[in-house]
Length: 195
Image (cartoon, rainbow, N blue to C red; front, top):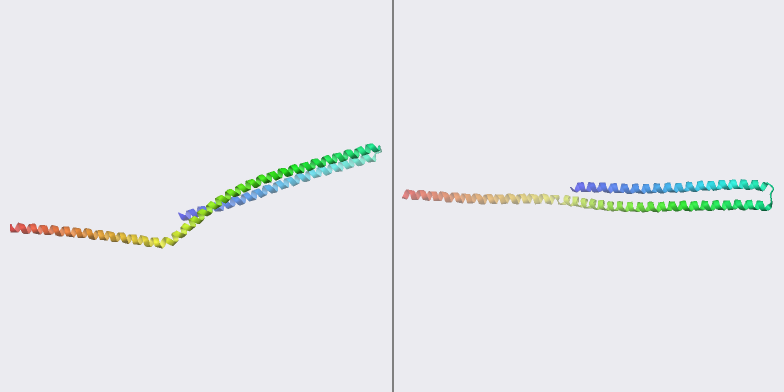
Protein backbone atom coordinates (compact mmCIF):
# COMPACT_ATOMS: atom_id res chain seq x y z
CA UNK A 1 0.00 0.00 0.00
CA UNK A 2 2.65 2.49 1.08
CA UNK A 3 4.88 1.46 -1.82
CA UNK A 4 2.08 2.12 -4.35
CA UNK A 5 1.39 5.50 -2.76
CA UNK A 6 5.07 6.42 -2.93
CA UNK A 7 5.31 5.24 -6.55
CA UNK A 8 2.21 7.19 -7.54
CA UNK A 9 3.46 10.32 -5.76
CA UNK A 10 6.86 9.98 -7.43
CA UNK A 11 5.16 9.65 -10.83
CA UNK A 12 2.96 12.70 -10.18
CA UNK A 13 5.98 14.70 -9.03
CA UNK A 14 7.99 13.71 -12.10
CA UNK A 15 5.08 14.47 -14.44
CA UNK A 16 4.51 17.85 -12.82
CA UNK A 17 8.19 18.82 -13.13
CA UNK A 18 8.15 17.74 -16.79
CA UNK A 19 4.99 19.77 -17.46
CA UNK A 20 6.49 22.82 -15.74
CA UNK A 21 9.67 22.51 -17.78
CA UNK A 22 7.66 22.09 -20.98
CA UNK A 23 5.63 25.22 -20.14
CA UNK A 24 8.86 27.18 -19.65
CA UNK A 25 10.27 25.91 -22.96
CA UNK A 26 7.01 26.71 -24.78
CA UNK A 27 6.93 30.20 -23.27
CA UNK A 28 10.55 30.88 -24.15
CA UNK A 29 9.96 29.63 -27.70
CA UNK A 30 6.90 31.86 -28.09
CA UNK A 31 8.85 34.87 -26.78
CA UNK A 32 11.66 34.16 -29.21
CA UNK A 33 9.23 33.85 -32.12
CA UNK A 34 7.52 37.14 -31.23
CA UNK A 35 10.88 38.88 -30.89
CA UNK A 36 12.00 37.53 -34.26
CA UNK A 37 8.77 38.65 -35.92
CA UNK A 38 9.14 42.11 -34.36
CA UNK A 39 12.76 42.39 -35.49
CA UNK A 40 11.89 41.17 -38.98
CA UNK A 41 8.98 43.59 -39.26
CA UNK A 42 11.12 46.47 -38.02
CA UNK A 43 13.89 45.64 -40.49
CA UNK A 44 11.50 45.23 -43.42
CA UNK A 45 9.81 48.55 -42.64
CA UNK A 46 13.21 50.20 -42.22
CA UNK A 47 14.33 48.86 -45.59
CA UNK A 48 11.17 50.20 -47.22
CA UNK A 49 11.79 53.61 -45.64
CA UNK A 50 15.40 53.59 -46.87
CA UNK A 51 14.26 52.58 -50.35
CA UNK A 52 11.81 55.47 -50.39
CA UNK A 53 14.61 57.82 -49.22
CA UNK A 54 16.78 56.61 -52.05
CA UNK A 55 13.95 57.06 -54.55
CA UNK A 56 13.18 60.54 -53.23
CA UNK A 57 16.85 61.48 -53.31
CA UNK A 58 17.14 60.24 -56.90
CA UNK A 59 13.98 62.14 -57.84
CA UNK A 60 15.20 65.29 -56.01
CA UNK A 61 18.58 65.07 -57.72
CA UNK A 62 16.90 64.82 -61.12
CA UNK A 63 14.65 67.77 -60.32
CA UNK A 64 17.55 69.92 -59.17
CA UNK A 65 19.62 69.08 -62.26
CA UNK A 66 16.98 70.59 -64.47
CA UNK A 67 16.93 74.32 -64.76
CA UNK A 68 14.06 75.73 -62.78
CA UNK A 69 13.30 78.62 -60.62
CA UNK A 70 14.60 78.81 -57.12
CA UNK A 71 11.12 78.70 -55.68
CA UNK A 72 10.25 75.48 -57.53
CA UNK A 73 13.50 73.86 -56.39
CA UNK A 74 12.83 74.94 -52.83
CA UNK A 75 9.29 73.54 -53.04
CA UNK A 76 10.64 70.21 -54.31
CA UNK A 77 13.11 70.04 -51.42
CA UNK A 78 10.36 70.90 -48.92
CA UNK A 79 7.98 68.30 -50.39
CA UNK A 80 10.67 65.66 -50.29
CA UNK A 81 11.53 66.55 -46.69
CA UNK A 82 7.85 66.45 -45.70
CA UNK A 83 7.41 63.05 -47.38
CA UNK A 84 10.52 61.81 -45.55
CA UNK A 85 9.18 63.16 -42.28
CA UNK A 86 5.83 61.45 -42.86
CA UNK A 87 7.58 58.14 -43.59
CA UNK A 88 9.68 58.57 -40.41
CA UNK A 89 6.56 59.14 -38.35
CA UNK A 90 4.80 56.11 -39.86
CA UNK A 91 7.93 54.03 -39.34
CA UNK A 92 8.20 55.14 -35.69
CA UNK A 93 4.47 54.49 -35.18
CA UNK A 94 4.79 50.99 -36.66
CA UNK A 95 7.75 50.26 -34.37
CA UNK A 96 5.83 51.53 -31.34
CA UNK A 97 2.67 49.65 -32.29
CA UNK A 98 4.49 46.40 -33.06
CA UNK A 99 6.59 46.81 -29.91
CA UNK A 100 3.47 47.40 -27.86
CA UNK A 101 1.83 44.32 -29.36
CA UNK A 102 4.93 42.25 -28.59
CA UNK A 103 5.02 43.53 -25.00
CA UNK A 104 1.32 42.73 -24.54
CA UNK A 105 1.89 39.24 -25.92
CA UNK A 106 4.89 38.86 -23.60
CA UNK A 107 2.79 39.96 -20.63
CA UNK A 108 0.02 37.49 -21.50
CA UNK A 109 2.57 34.74 -22.03
CA UNK A 110 4.23 35.54 -18.72
CA UNK A 111 0.87 35.57 -16.93
CA UNK A 112 -0.02 32.19 -18.46
CA UNK A 113 3.41 30.81 -17.56
CA UNK A 114 3.15 32.03 -13.96
CA UNK A 115 -0.31 30.50 -13.67
CA UNK A 116 0.92 27.19 -15.11
CA UNK A 117 3.97 27.19 -12.84
CA UNK A 118 1.79 27.97 -9.82
CA UNK A 119 -0.48 25.05 -10.64
CA UNK A 120 2.48 22.75 -11.22
CA UNK A 121 4.04 23.95 -7.97
CA UNK A 122 0.85 23.08 -6.11
CA UNK A 123 0.81 19.63 -7.74
CA UNK A 124 4.47 19.14 -6.87
CA UNK A 125 3.84 20.10 -3.25
CA UNK A 126 0.94 17.65 -2.99
CA UNK A 127 2.98 14.88 -4.59
CA UNK A 128 5.96 15.65 -2.37
CA UNK A 129 3.77 15.60 0.75
CA UNK A 130 2.34 12.26 -0.32
CA UNK A 131 5.85 11.03 -1.06
CA UNK A 132 7.16 12.14 2.32
CA UNK A 133 4.13 10.73 4.13
CA UNK A 134 4.38 7.43 2.25
CA UNK A 135 8.11 7.20 2.88
CA UNK A 136 7.59 7.99 6.56
CA UNK A 137 4.86 5.36 6.84
CA UNK A 138 7.05 2.80 5.08
CA UNK A 139 9.93 3.66 7.43
CA UNK A 140 7.70 3.37 10.49
CA UNK A 141 6.35 0.05 9.19
CA UNK A 142 9.92 -1.13 8.69
CA UNK A 143 10.92 -0.11 12.21
CA UNK A 144 7.84 -1.56 13.86
CA UNK A 145 7.86 -4.82 11.89
CA UNK A 146 9.92 -6.75 14.52
CA UNK A 147 7.66 -5.43 17.29
CA UNK A 148 4.60 -6.39 15.28
CA UNK A 149 6.04 -9.89 14.88
CA UNK A 150 6.66 -10.15 18.61
CA UNK A 151 3.20 -8.76 19.34
CA UNK A 152 1.62 -11.33 17.04
CA UNK A 153 3.71 -14.09 18.65
CA UNK A 154 2.68 -12.91 22.12
CA UNK A 155 -0.97 -12.74 21.02
CA UNK A 156 -0.73 -16.27 19.60
CA UNK A 157 0.94 -17.56 22.79
CA UNK A 158 -1.69 -15.84 24.94
CA UNK A 159 -4.47 -17.32 22.83
CA UNK A 160 -2.86 -20.77 23.01
CA UNK A 161 -2.46 -20.46 26.80
CA UNK A 162 -6.08 -19.34 27.09
CA UNK A 163 -7.24 -22.28 24.97
CA UNK A 164 -5.01 -24.58 27.02
CA UNK A 165 -6.47 -23.18 30.26
CA UNK A 166 -9.99 -23.57 28.92
CA UNK A 167 -9.18 -27.10 27.81
CA UNK A 168 -7.75 -27.90 31.25
CA UNK A 169 -10.83 -26.42 32.95
CA UNK A 170 -13.15 -28.35 30.67
CA UNK A 171 -11.15 -31.53 31.21
CA UNK A 172 -11.21 -30.98 34.96
CA UNK A 173 -14.97 -30.35 34.92
CA UNK A 174 -15.55 -33.40 32.77
CA UNK A 175 -13.27 -35.44 35.08
CA UNK A 176 -15.13 -34.20 38.17
CA UNK A 177 -18.46 -34.83 36.46
CA UNK A 178 -17.29 -38.35 35.46
CA UNK A 179 -16.03 -39.00 38.98
CA UNK A 180 -19.30 -37.76 40.50
CA UNK A 181 -21.24 -39.90 38.07
CA UNK A 182 -19.07 -42.91 38.89
CA UNK A 183 -19.50 -42.20 42.60
CA UNK A 184 -23.27 -42.00 42.25
CA UNK A 185 -23.34 -45.14 40.19
CA UNK A 186 -21.20 -46.85 42.80
CA UNK A 187 -23.49 -45.55 45.55
CA UNK A 188 -26.55 -46.72 43.71
CA UNK A 189 -24.97 -50.12 43.14
CA UNK A 190 -24.01 -50.38 46.81
CA UNK A 191 -27.49 -49.36 47.89
CA UNK A 192 -28.97 -51.82 45.48
CA UNK A 193 -26.86 -54.62 47.00
CA UNK A 194 -27.72 -53.66 50.54
CA UNK A 195 -31.34 -53.63 49.82
